[in-house]
Length: 332
Image (cartoon, rainbow, N blue to C red; front, side, top):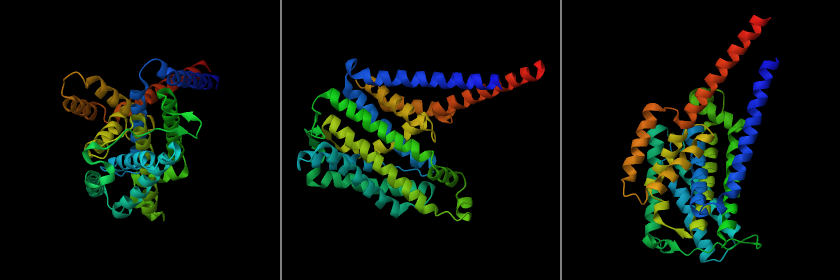
Protein backbone atom coordinates (compact mmCIF):
# COMPACT_ATOMS: atom_id res chain seq x y z
CA UNK A 1 0.00 0.00 0.00
CA UNK A 2 2.83 2.37 0.92
CA UNK A 3 4.50 1.69 -2.40
CA UNK A 4 1.38 2.91 -4.19
CA UNK A 5 0.74 5.95 -1.99
CA UNK A 6 4.27 7.39 -2.08
CA UNK A 7 4.46 7.82 -5.88
CA UNK A 8 1.04 9.50 -5.84
CA UNK A 9 2.14 11.93 -3.11
CA UNK A 10 5.37 12.59 -4.98
CA UNK A 11 3.53 13.37 -8.22
CA UNK A 12 1.13 15.72 -6.43
CA UNK A 13 4.01 17.54 -4.77
CA UNK A 14 5.76 17.95 -8.11
CA UNK A 15 2.52 19.20 -9.64
CA UNK A 16 2.10 21.78 -6.88
CA UNK A 17 5.69 22.99 -7.31
CA UNK A 18 5.23 23.27 -11.07
CA UNK A 19 2.01 25.28 -10.56
CA UNK A 20 3.77 27.65 -8.15
CA UNK A 21 6.67 28.10 -10.56
CA UNK A 22 4.27 28.85 -13.42
CA UNK A 23 2.32 31.36 -11.31
CA UNK A 24 5.54 33.12 -10.32
CA UNK A 25 6.69 33.25 -13.95
CA UNK A 26 3.37 34.72 -15.11
CA UNK A 27 3.55 37.41 -12.43
CA UNK A 28 7.13 38.36 -13.35
CA UNK A 29 6.75 38.35 -17.16
CA UNK A 30 5.88 42.08 -17.51
CA UNK A 31 9.19 42.95 -15.84
CA UNK A 32 11.16 40.65 -18.15
CA UNK A 33 9.67 41.04 -21.63
CA UNK A 34 7.22 43.22 -23.55
CA UNK A 35 3.79 42.43 -22.06
CA UNK A 36 1.72 43.11 -25.20
CA UNK A 37 2.93 39.95 -26.95
CA UNK A 38 2.10 37.83 -23.90
CA UNK A 39 -1.35 39.41 -23.69
CA UNK A 40 -1.90 38.30 -27.29
CA UNK A 41 -0.94 34.77 -26.27
CA UNK A 42 -3.38 34.90 -23.36
CA UNK A 43 -6.24 35.97 -25.65
CA UNK A 44 -5.59 33.09 -28.06
CA UNK A 45 -5.18 30.60 -25.21
CA UNK A 46 -8.69 31.44 -24.04
CA UNK A 47 -10.01 31.52 -27.62
CA UNK A 48 -8.61 28.07 -28.48
CA UNK A 49 -9.81 26.61 -25.17
CA UNK A 50 -13.32 27.96 -25.81
CA UNK A 51 -13.34 26.41 -29.28
CA UNK A 52 -12.14 23.12 -27.83
CA UNK A 53 -15.25 23.07 -25.66
CA UNK A 54 -17.40 22.44 -28.74
CA UNK A 55 -14.93 20.67 -31.03
CA UNK A 56 -13.17 18.46 -28.51
CA UNK A 57 -15.96 17.78 -26.03
CA UNK A 58 -19.23 18.24 -27.93
CA UNK A 59 -17.94 16.94 -31.26
CA UNK A 60 -19.04 20.05 -33.22
CA UNK A 61 -16.54 21.30 -35.78
CA UNK A 62 -17.04 25.06 -36.02
CA UNK A 63 -15.31 26.99 -38.80
CA UNK A 64 -16.91 30.28 -37.86
CA UNK A 65 -15.66 31.07 -34.36
CA UNK A 66 -13.81 34.15 -35.61
CA UNK A 67 -17.25 35.78 -35.93
CA UNK A 68 -17.62 35.66 -32.14
CA UNK A 69 -14.03 36.69 -31.43
CA UNK A 70 -14.00 39.57 -33.91
CA UNK A 71 -17.66 40.56 -33.48
CA UNK A 72 -17.15 41.04 -29.75
CA UNK A 73 -13.97 43.01 -30.50
CA UNK A 74 -15.91 45.48 -32.67
CA UNK A 75 -18.72 45.88 -30.14
CA UNK A 76 -16.26 46.39 -27.27
CA UNK A 77 -14.20 48.90 -29.26
CA UNK A 78 -17.29 50.88 -30.28
CA UNK A 79 -18.67 50.86 -26.74
CA UNK A 80 -15.38 52.07 -25.26
CA UNK A 81 -14.50 54.68 -27.90
CA UNK A 82 -17.82 56.06 -29.16
CA UNK A 83 -20.13 55.49 -26.20
CA UNK A 84 -17.40 56.09 -23.61
CA UNK A 85 -18.44 53.13 -21.47
CA UNK A 86 -16.14 51.79 -18.72
CA UNK A 87 -13.75 48.91 -19.37
CA UNK A 88 -15.75 46.22 -17.59
CA UNK A 89 -19.06 47.25 -19.23
CA UNK A 90 -17.48 47.30 -22.70
CA UNK A 91 -16.02 43.83 -22.20
CA UNK A 92 -19.31 42.42 -20.91
CA UNK A 93 -21.19 43.93 -23.86
CA UNK A 94 -18.77 42.30 -26.28
CA UNK A 95 -19.09 38.91 -24.59
CA UNK A 96 -22.89 39.22 -24.46
CA UNK A 97 -23.01 40.08 -28.18
CA UNK A 98 -20.89 37.00 -28.95
CA UNK A 99 -23.23 34.86 -26.85
CA UNK A 100 -26.30 36.14 -28.71
CA UNK A 101 -24.55 35.62 -32.04
CA UNK A 102 -23.65 32.09 -30.94
CA UNK A 103 -27.29 31.45 -30.05
CA UNK A 104 -28.31 32.57 -33.54
CA UNK A 105 -25.68 30.36 -35.19
CA UNK A 106 -26.70 27.45 -33.00
CA UNK A 107 -30.41 27.73 -33.69
CA UNK A 108 -29.68 27.64 -37.42
CA UNK A 109 -27.24 24.76 -37.55
CA UNK A 110 -27.15 22.80 -34.28
CA UNK A 111 -29.23 19.90 -35.66
CA UNK A 112 -26.75 19.32 -38.46
CA UNK A 113 -23.72 17.06 -38.09
CA UNK A 114 -20.16 16.87 -39.32
CA UNK A 115 -19.24 18.81 -42.43
CA UNK A 116 -22.77 20.23 -42.78
CA UNK A 117 -22.53 21.98 -39.41
CA UNK A 118 -19.01 23.20 -40.24
CA UNK A 119 -20.16 24.67 -43.56
CA UNK A 120 -23.14 26.41 -41.93
CA UNK A 121 -20.92 28.08 -39.33
CA UNK A 122 -18.45 29.09 -42.04
CA UNK A 123 -21.19 30.62 -44.19
CA UNK A 124 -22.70 32.54 -41.28
CA UNK A 125 -19.26 33.79 -40.23
CA UNK A 126 -18.63 35.06 -43.75
CA UNK A 127 -21.87 37.02 -43.49
CA UNK A 128 -20.53 38.63 -40.32
CA UNK A 129 -17.28 39.42 -42.14
CA UNK A 130 -19.25 41.07 -44.98
CA UNK A 131 -21.18 43.18 -42.44
CA UNK A 132 -17.90 44.19 -40.77
CA UNK A 133 -16.63 45.43 -44.14
CA UNK A 134 -19.81 47.32 -45.07
CA UNK A 135 -21.21 48.74 -41.83
CA UNK A 136 -20.05 52.29 -41.07
CA UNK A 137 -19.45 51.87 -37.34
CA UNK A 138 -16.73 49.23 -37.92
CA UNK A 139 -14.51 51.57 -39.91
CA UNK A 140 -14.27 49.17 -42.86
CA UNK A 141 -10.71 48.22 -43.75
CA UNK A 142 -9.34 50.84 -41.34
CA UNK A 143 -11.08 49.26 -38.37
CA UNK A 144 -11.62 51.07 -35.06
CA UNK A 145 -8.34 52.59 -33.96
CA UNK A 146 -7.07 54.24 -30.77
CA UNK A 147 -9.57 52.41 -28.57
CA UNK A 148 -9.27 53.75 -25.01
CA UNK A 149 -8.67 51.17 -22.30
CA UNK A 150 -10.15 53.29 -19.53
CA UNK A 151 -9.94 52.19 -15.92
CA UNK A 152 -10.92 49.02 -14.09
CA UNK A 153 -13.75 49.73 -11.64
CA UNK A 154 -12.70 53.39 -11.78
CA UNK A 155 -9.58 52.60 -9.75
CA UNK A 156 -6.88 50.97 -11.91
CA UNK A 157 -5.53 52.99 -14.84
CA UNK A 158 -5.28 50.51 -17.72
CA UNK A 159 -3.22 52.83 -19.91
CA UNK A 160 -0.32 51.39 -17.93
CA UNK A 161 0.72 48.31 -19.92
CA UNK A 162 1.57 46.30 -16.81
CA UNK A 163 -1.79 46.95 -15.20
CA UNK A 164 -3.48 45.87 -18.42
CA UNK A 165 -1.34 42.74 -18.48
CA UNK A 166 -2.53 41.62 -15.07
CA UNK A 167 -6.16 42.31 -15.99
CA UNK A 168 -5.86 40.18 -19.16
CA UNK A 169 -4.09 37.47 -17.14
CA UNK A 170 -6.94 37.48 -14.63
CA UNK A 171 -9.53 37.36 -17.41
CA UNK A 172 -7.81 34.38 -19.02
CA UNK A 173 -7.65 32.53 -15.70
CA UNK A 174 -11.35 33.16 -15.05
CA UNK A 175 -12.26 31.90 -18.52
CA UNK A 176 -10.13 28.79 -18.15
CA UNK A 177 -11.65 28.05 -14.73
CA UNK A 178 -15.13 28.25 -16.25
CA UNK A 179 -14.08 25.79 -18.97
CA UNK A 180 -12.44 23.49 -16.42
CA UNK A 181 -15.54 23.44 -14.26
CA UNK A 182 -17.76 22.84 -17.27
CA UNK A 183 -15.90 19.84 -18.63
CA UNK A 184 -15.64 18.25 -15.16
CA UNK A 185 -19.33 18.75 -14.34
CA UNK A 186 -22.23 16.39 -15.12
CA UNK A 187 -22.95 18.66 -18.09
CA UNK A 188 -19.43 18.02 -19.41
CA UNK A 189 -19.86 14.27 -18.99
CA UNK A 190 -23.08 14.42 -21.00
CA UNK A 191 -21.25 16.29 -23.76
CA UNK A 192 -18.60 13.58 -23.82
CA UNK A 193 -21.31 10.90 -24.04
CA UNK A 194 -22.94 12.71 -26.96
CA UNK A 195 -19.58 12.98 -28.72
CA UNK A 196 -18.84 9.28 -28.29
CA UNK A 197 -22.27 7.92 -29.20
CA UNK A 198 -25.01 10.42 -29.99
CA UNK A 199 -27.58 7.75 -30.90
CA UNK A 200 -27.18 6.09 -27.51
CA UNK A 201 -27.52 9.47 -25.75
CA UNK A 202 -30.79 10.07 -27.61
CA UNK A 203 -32.03 6.60 -26.65
CA UNK A 204 -31.40 7.47 -22.99
CA UNK A 205 -33.82 10.36 -23.29
CA UNK A 206 -31.28 13.21 -23.39
CA UNK A 207 -32.18 16.37 -25.28
CA UNK A 208 -29.01 16.30 -27.39
CA UNK A 209 -29.77 19.48 -29.32
CA UNK A 210 -30.25 21.47 -26.11
CA UNK A 211 -26.95 20.29 -24.64
CA UNK A 212 -25.09 21.07 -27.86
CA UNK A 213 -26.68 24.50 -28.12
CA UNK A 214 -25.77 25.35 -24.52
CA UNK A 215 -22.16 24.32 -25.08
CA UNK A 216 -22.01 26.29 -28.32
CA UNK A 217 -23.37 29.48 -26.74
CA UNK A 218 -20.95 29.17 -23.81
CA UNK A 219 -18.06 28.67 -26.23
CA UNK A 220 -19.14 31.68 -28.29
CA UNK A 221 -19.42 33.85 -25.17
CA UNK A 222 -15.92 32.92 -23.96
CA UNK A 223 -14.53 33.46 -27.46
CA UNK A 224 -16.09 36.92 -27.44
CA UNK A 225 -14.61 37.57 -24.01
CA UNK A 226 -11.17 36.71 -25.43
CA UNK A 227 -11.76 39.02 -28.40
CA UNK A 228 -12.79 41.87 -26.08
CA UNK A 229 -9.62 41.49 -24.03
CA UNK A 230 -7.49 41.44 -27.18
CA UNK A 231 -9.03 44.55 -28.73
CA UNK A 232 -8.52 46.59 -25.57
CA UNK A 233 -4.97 45.30 -25.24
CA UNK A 234 -4.01 46.34 -28.78
CA UNK A 235 -6.50 49.25 -28.89
CA UNK A 236 -7.50 48.19 -32.40
CA UNK A 237 -10.43 46.29 -33.90
CA UNK A 238 -9.53 45.06 -37.39
CA UNK A 239 -10.98 42.84 -40.11
CA UNK A 240 -8.47 40.05 -39.54
CA UNK A 241 -10.26 39.32 -36.27
CA UNK A 242 -13.39 38.18 -38.15
CA UNK A 243 -11.76 36.49 -41.15
CA UNK A 244 -12.15 32.78 -41.93
CA UNK A 245 -8.36 32.49 -41.76
CA UNK A 246 -8.54 33.11 -38.02
CA UNK A 247 -11.24 30.46 -37.61
CA UNK A 248 -9.00 27.93 -39.34
CA UNK A 249 -5.96 29.02 -37.37
CA UNK A 250 -7.62 28.53 -33.99
CA UNK A 251 -8.82 25.06 -35.07
CA UNK A 252 -5.20 24.31 -35.98
CA UNK A 253 -4.05 25.45 -32.54
CA UNK A 254 -6.50 23.08 -30.89
CA UNK A 255 -5.52 20.11 -33.07
CA UNK A 256 -1.78 20.64 -32.64
CA UNK A 257 -2.07 20.88 -28.85
CA UNK A 258 -4.51 18.02 -28.38
CA UNK A 259 -8.22 17.84 -29.14
CA UNK A 260 -10.48 17.02 -26.20
CA UNK A 261 -7.88 17.83 -23.53
CA UNK A 262 -7.79 20.82 -21.21
CA UNK A 263 -4.08 21.61 -21.61
CA UNK A 264 -3.87 20.84 -25.34
CA UNK A 265 -5.32 24.13 -26.69
CA UNK A 266 -3.23 26.09 -24.19
CA UNK A 267 -0.02 24.48 -25.45
CA UNK A 268 -1.00 24.62 -29.11
CA UNK A 269 -2.06 28.28 -29.09
CA UNK A 270 0.96 29.44 -27.09
CA UNK A 271 3.29 27.55 -29.42
CA UNK A 272 1.80 28.77 -32.70
CA UNK A 273 1.38 32.41 -31.62
CA UNK A 274 4.99 32.46 -30.41
CA UNK A 275 6.20 30.80 -33.61
CA UNK A 276 4.37 33.31 -35.81
CA UNK A 277 5.82 36.17 -33.77
CA UNK A 278 9.35 34.81 -34.17
CA UNK A 279 8.92 34.29 -37.92
CA UNK A 280 7.21 37.63 -38.57
CA UNK A 281 10.46 39.44 -39.37
CA UNK A 282 12.38 36.48 -40.81
CA UNK A 283 11.08 36.75 -44.36
CA UNK A 284 10.19 33.04 -44.34
CA UNK A 285 6.77 31.80 -45.56
CA UNK A 286 4.88 31.57 -42.27
CA UNK A 287 1.86 29.76 -43.73
CA UNK A 288 4.07 27.09 -45.29
CA UNK A 289 5.95 26.48 -42.05
CA UNK A 290 2.77 26.31 -39.95
CA UNK A 291 1.18 23.97 -42.51
CA UNK A 292 4.22 21.70 -42.39
CA UNK A 293 4.04 21.56 -38.60
CA UNK A 294 0.36 20.66 -38.84
CA UNK A 295 1.08 17.81 -41.27
CA UNK A 296 3.83 16.47 -39.01
CA UNK A 297 1.48 16.55 -36.01
CA UNK A 298 -1.28 14.79 -37.96
CA UNK A 299 1.12 12.06 -39.13
CA UNK A 300 3.16 11.54 -35.96
CA UNK A 301 1.02 12.95 -33.11
CA UNK A 302 -2.53 11.91 -33.91
CA UNK A 303 -3.73 12.93 -30.47
CA UNK A 304 -1.83 16.23 -30.50
CA UNK A 305 1.30 17.12 -28.58
CA UNK A 306 -0.29 17.04 -25.13
CA UNK A 307 -2.46 14.04 -25.97
CA UNK A 308 0.60 11.99 -26.91
CA UNK A 309 2.53 13.18 -23.86
CA UNK A 310 -0.34 12.24 -21.57
CA UNK A 311 -0.62 8.82 -23.20
CA UNK A 312 3.10 8.19 -22.75
CA UNK A 313 2.97 9.31 -19.11
CA UNK A 314 -0.04 7.09 -18.51
CA UNK A 315 1.73 4.08 -20.01
CA UNK A 316 4.86 4.72 -17.96
CA UNK A 317 2.84 5.09 -14.75
CA UNK A 318 0.91 1.91 -15.53
CA UNK A 319 4.14 0.02 -16.20
CA UNK A 320 5.72 1.31 -12.98
CA UNK A 321 2.67 0.34 -10.92
CA UNK A 322 2.75 -3.14 -12.43
CA UNK A 323 6.44 -3.50 -11.54
CA UNK A 324 5.81 -2.29 -7.98
CA UNK A 325 2.91 -4.71 -7.56
CA UNK A 326 5.10 -7.52 -8.87
CA UNK A 327 7.84 -6.63 -6.36
CA UNK A 328 5.30 -6.61 -3.55
CA UNK A 329 4.01 -10.05 -4.52
CA UNK A 330 7.53 -11.46 -4.73
CA UNK A 331 8.55 -9.98 -1.37
CA UNK A 332 5.45 -11.41 0.30
